[in-house]
Length: 216
Image (cartoon, one colour):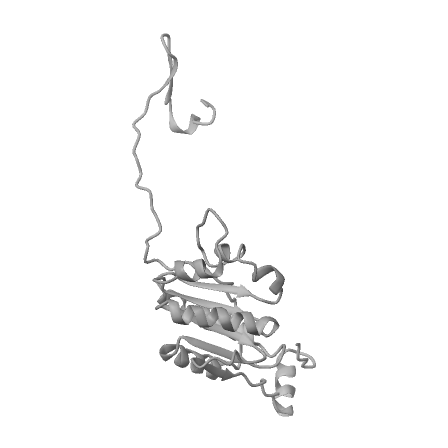
């Protein structure tokens, strides 16, 4: 220990009656705790915002300003998850309890109630049922992102309907290839990005010092 503390002076003193004693002033630093109103983030961050999706992001934000359930609808691989994450990252700080992302691509795992508490930041001693989870979120203020819902449309629709009916401040952003068919659902149809005209491709290729190639 004396070696470990050698940079702090002679704080370890030999004491014939006690062996060694600690001889230094101790200052108790206050423990910095997370504020109850500080958002918690359970969503993946994005390094670069998607190019060409500014209008879509603005439109989805506008829908979420007035609706609690917004569905991003589009074909597979069109970028629904990416734009959902952009919107979620932009809005997360507006929610006292943050935002949480649930990937439903593997529904056999995530639809099990034992996975939900960790996914949405609940501290539980036992695995609750869906009704208990909904009840626990009754007064929470958060954004819930449900991704790839087309695999489990029926169960997700029932779950979302329960959230809307039994919570007051939980907003839900859904990505899916098919709508949930709920009365309160506001749909944003995500269109494919337009291909740049040939002149733009040639110009971009020259700027990169070689032929232009689109990835994806």
